Image (tube, rainbow, N blue to C red; front, side, top):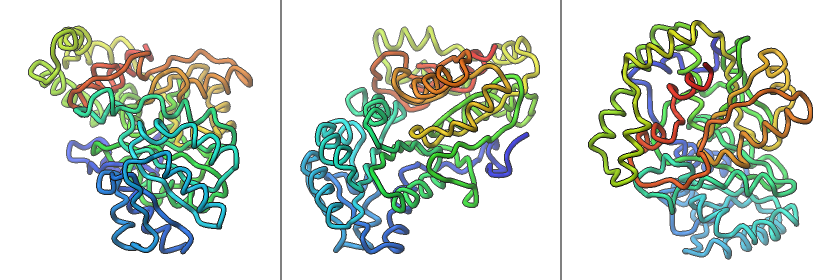
Amino acid sequence: MLSKSLNPKLFFKNVEMVPTRNGYGEGLVEAGKRDRNVVVLCCDLTESTRSLAFAERFPERFVEVGVAEQNMTGLAAGMATYGKVPFTSSYAVFSPGRNWEQTRLAIAYGEANVKIAGAHAGISVGPDGATHQALEDIAIMRVLPGMVVLAPCDVYETRKAVLAAAEYRGPVYLRFTREATPVITTPRAPFAIGKAQVLRTGRDATIIAAGPLVFEALLAAEALAGNRVAITRLLERYPAIAKRVKSSSLHGHSMQRARQTTKWTPALIRDRLTRAGRMDVEVINCPTIKPLDYGTIVTSAKKTGRVVTVEEHQITGGLFGAIAELLARHHPTPITPIGMPNSFGESGKPMELLEKYGMTAPWIIDALM
């Protein structure tokens, strides 16, 4: 059964598509209204990170640092010492990528009340290529003692995550993406740091997902349950991607790999659904990767006995790593990871890359068979 917190038009072809980074900008403005101590810093990416909205509304509380992520981190830690609530804004490959040492010592070690926003995370950054596709940021941040790690699934949840981070006392890392993605939840859907949400109840298996790929998890689960609207969406969505890949910007060995891995036709998807049979799959949205929601995750694993994790991040050290560590200690359960398979990305259209590297709904169905 689907949660009432979901967008009722989620599987419609014309579902609203909005980048999660928009939620960051909206959340900053609202947090600024609620608390005069909220300040925002940015490294020459004001429009891209959507911190521009805060800069225009509260120019006296906005600092353009320039291309200097290490300096931005030190400034933010100092501001926090004097009672400010700084949000640092950059691409995730630069913050926390470039300034990880300063983040470790100036923020995490000192338990500074700084919120670190990593934009353009994941492979869906697309044409920017491997150098700008942060696929290791969750791993390097969740290992830091005391660091909260958030990866919201859509624009509404990102906005709520920003507001929750502003009220939370301590360091927080917020991860969000550039590409417009389906609006999964509603403005009234609950959100709290440390809480996961069961978006679909089930008994045969559990999918635990984070970020915009929660949509792919729900689409796979509903198709396996026989939801005709979801199956229609599934059949329409992926052959179109396969067709685009044949004339895409991928070249050389990448083009060859794409041909080998992008093979979803309507007939093949129907074959997978037939072979899988009707399945009743539970789907958990896990926007807080640290600290994990022990109760929700362990309860679901005990009920279904099988888990699939879905993330736009390296399989090592990300959501899969966190879930595996939790279940290994409290309820050992077979887990199948879906994520970046120990590889760097490349330039391409976002959906082409998600499909090529096996992070879309047909691959999730394949993993559940």
